Length: 225
Image (cartoon, rainbow, N blue to C red):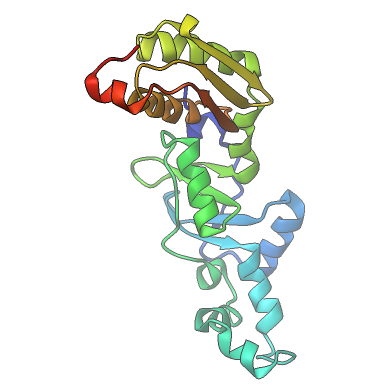
């Protein structure tokens, strides 16, 4: 069972319009304790994102580069200086917005957050309309899954029904989301496929491979015993 964005996202989203002022956004940050706002048009379509970092750029750079050594000032991106002059969400937003769909996997959303170093992502439907928001804390909720559920999915759902193997040939233990696999797989290829599948089970933190692999010469000869 792989969790989807729609399973963990929040549908109560604090969004702003292109014309929302800097002062209004600063007040909303304090009021709602969020780190970013989706920017929407009059039809509820997402057109950008304003983050607390965008707002901070105005505060930090509004007086030019005062207080920064020349080398550091040279490294500041041109767009940050442009944002220092911004007055509205439309001026400060990053666009186009990076978004995810409700049916995207939580793993995909987490990967995007890590790669782009963002704390939350707007969730949009096929038409680009805002339907929710997903945060780092949301994607981490998949690791709250009980060990017993993880064990049942691996032994019954994967080993028995997906790989059509006898679960009795394997010893599977799960402790705090860490899965340990022991047993005698018929081949190294089968073992790698099984391990890869288990790593993608919702709630699995890590997989310890303690399988007993057959000698290479037996695999070549097709003697998988």
